[in-house]
Image 1 (spheres, rainbow, N blue to C red):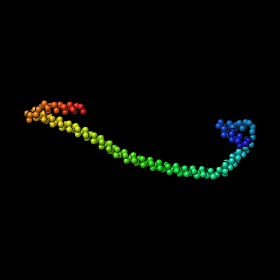
Image 2 (image 1 turned 90 degrees about the vertical axis):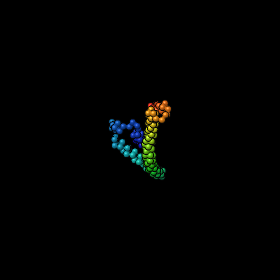
Image 3 (image 1 turned 180 degrees about the vertical axis):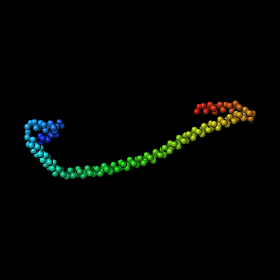
Length: 161
C-alpha cells in the first residue's frame, strides 16, 4: 500500500474509522501488515515534511517573522483604539454635562418668561380695574367706555391663552 492510496482512503469525506476497521478485519487481511504500512506511510510523511521544511526554511522563517511583526502592529492598533475610545468617552462627558445644564437653564428661562408675561397681564388687568373703579365712584372724568373696552379686551386676551 503506497502513501497516495492510503492518504486518499484516510482523507476521504465519508471515511469512518469503525467501518474501515471492521472491513479490514472481515476481509481477512493481516492487521499487522496494515499497521506496518501505516507506520511506513507515517515515516514517509515525516520525511516529506522535513524535506519541505528544509527546502523552504528561509521562507518559513520570514513568514514567522512577518507574523510576529503583524502581531506587534495589531497590538499597537488595539492600544490606539482603546485610547481613542477613552478619549471619545471623555469628550462625550465634557459635552453631555454642559448640554444638560444648558437645557435645564433654557427650560427655566422659558418658564420665567411665561410667568413674567402672565404677571404683566395681571398687573394691567388690576390697573384697568382700579381705573374703572375710580371712574365709577366719580373720579376724574375719563371716558368710562374706554376703560370698560380695555378691561373687556384684556379679559378676552386672557381667554386666548
